[in-house]
Structure formats: C-alpha cells, structure tokens
Image (cartoon, rainbow, N blue to C red; front, side, top):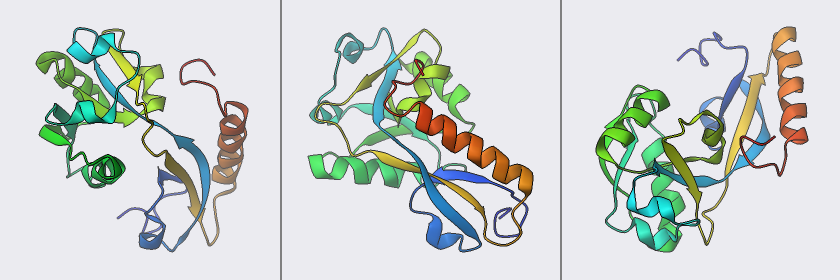
Length: 173
C-alpha cells in the first residue's frame, strides 16, 4: 500500500512483483540461493548438502501469508521441478527472529535465502541443496517519477556492495 501511495523512496523485493508496482523502476540487485535452515540438533543438520528429495514429508515452518504473501507460493514454485510439495505445518507472521525461535522450539526446518546465514543465531545452521534449487532474484526499485536523491545514493551504495560481494558466501563478504 505504501509503495502504491508514493510513501516509499526505495523498495527491495523478490523479482516478480514489478507488474504490481508500475510506479517503480526495478533492477536486479543480486541473486540468492535457497537453503534449508534448522537447529544444529535437527537430524539433517549433520549433512553438508541436502537433496531436495529430503523435503518430501518433512515438516517445515514457513513465513505467514499476512506479512509474507509470496513466501509459500515462491517456495512451492522452486521445489516443483523436483516433484516436491513443501509441507508447511505452521507459519510465523512476525519475521525471521520469531521464525528462529519457532525452529528451535520445534526442532524444525525452514527454507530461506542464503543471505540469512549472517544473522542466524549459532544454534541454527543453513545447508545448501544439491542439486541446487533455482536462484531467486532480488530487485531494487526506485520511484519512476521524482526519486529521492538520498534513496538514489543509497541504491548506488547497495549496488556497489552487491557487486563487491558477488560470489562471496553469506557472512564472509
């Protein structure tokens, strides 16, 4: 709503929403891989890489529809080529901090972008998929008309940092 009403100077969002926000000009900021995040005590945590087939019937905790409407459909689309339908047994609406707590409490797993690794508590681990799931593009959007000069400067800095850390593993760049 804020974006459509002109209340945002800059927007960072997954690719695919451009058609809903024609008042913004989007460019790709970076690409991110999807990883399986779980407590260190989870049975799959001992593996270095996770086969997508391991998600079959694995209970997952996702991000809730009210605040993250694209999360579940996007995860379903990423797993569809592997014949996997994710089993989201519950969802958290209050963001990743609450999701981390829920994962630890239930000794459960979730699907998140690999950039999350640098903010996870030490009690959680992130494991890549092998074969890898398709990458997700992250877009940066600025208003098409009268962009805020400070937002344009910030966008340039973000692009430069994304370029500088391209190829670096999250948390190491």
